[in-house]
Length: 301
Ligand SMILES: [Zn+2]
Image 1 (tube, rainbow, N blue to C red):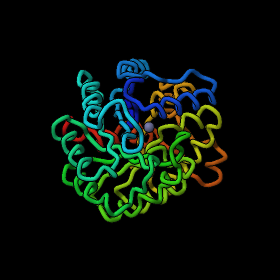
Image 2: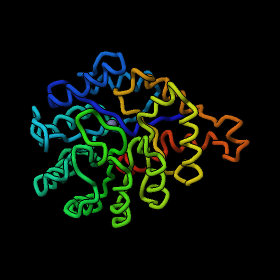
Image 3: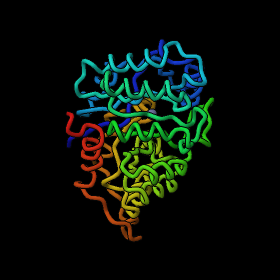
């Protein structure tokens, strides 16, 4: 089965902020593993090869509006564009904090038209609600450029603010820009029902399952429950994307195992007995690569 990883990251310690380095150390300590301070694109590519993942989407985060960063916004865009340049099967988005106003808007356009970035990654837990009126020029720009937005929803790291990660704050944008393609990362976990509600009422909203390795490795039934609910809400299969959040959850379930887990996913009999419809191989295939190919790789690949 073909596989596209719709949500991955690359970085080195030289491009992230001191706070992000600290947050990564705290998270690693909690999980009892070594912190991932360097994860360049070669590491992602090696994991893809090992796991049979054909293509991947890198999603840079702009934390520079509130934190001191080693690189300027433009330098960071260029860093990511250069990273993926030698890997035709890996594309990158651009990370821009929309509170940057005109400057950020110009960078979004430059990243897409000059540096080949294929979408916008937005990270509201850095301190903003996505449906702020002053950000509307950004959404208009995305419609004009015909690029998707991946919006982080759900859990965040120690020094960021989780209230801004509630999926419900995406509903107004999705409604006001019906042709804007939006992906809610992580199915909003733990606000799964809220993410599914926003996606089920807005046909332009999809969800990605990155980060769910945590549940798959410990309580796999929760993955089944999420998918069964998503199917009831008609978000699964046509608006759900496979993803990993590589390399953040490698300690819980390496990419190779996450791919295998998801590709073979079946609801247990007792859930089917309760009335949930079993999931088919065709539906899983749609989630594993077809949706991401349509949304992110499109005709341009
Ligand atoms: Zn991520």
